[in-house]
Image 1 (cartoon, rainbow, N blue to C red):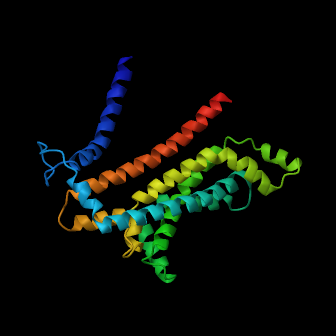
Image 2: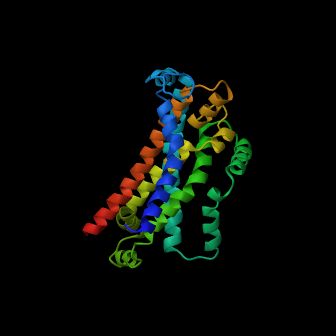
Image 3: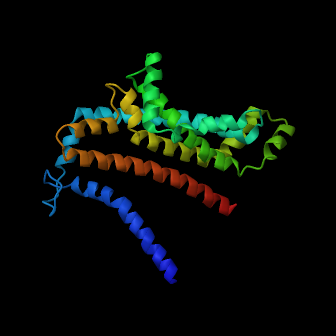
Length: 263
């Protein structure tokens, strides 16, 4: 290993330590018997996990977050696939504007998106409902799904579909039996990533959820009162769910690459 490689390795290690240190601290102190996060550690305890297990507001927030994440993942992936396939297959006037609008939501400050969603949902009488959170998260997450699926479609030979059409397959049959199976790894990855983004998203949910709090909104409400070690336990569980979804997305990509190498 050259000196440059060693310096790069140390640099990358320092970055990972900087990023992961707060998360590791959160998890470690979620098992601390002491109420206050201080060293030395006063002992191992599951008290704070038992506390959130008996907290009905945490249960409700987790259930709401799970419902929103699953619905957002499905709808965002469907819309993302449609947008990505439109970009891949069709040429039309205003295509660049269409793509710019489709990819715009993540570039807008989330506070602005939250206010805009609240204003719109109030006009259609959906403010304060889980449906409003799902719609708001779908707007925010669909571009991620579109980007992942479009990257996959870039590897699809553009002559495959015309060949299927010449053999008598309809456009819908070709999409169902050729395009969708080809995009399956990207679709699974898109669903996992959008579910993770939705599960963690706070600002849009805070503006439009009303009394139907998601878990991140519930955590904020807990922080506004007396700081409790339960937050460490809740945060650890949220991290576990999120990292699991990210690993699922990575596993889908790895499976595709392994299959491709074996072909």
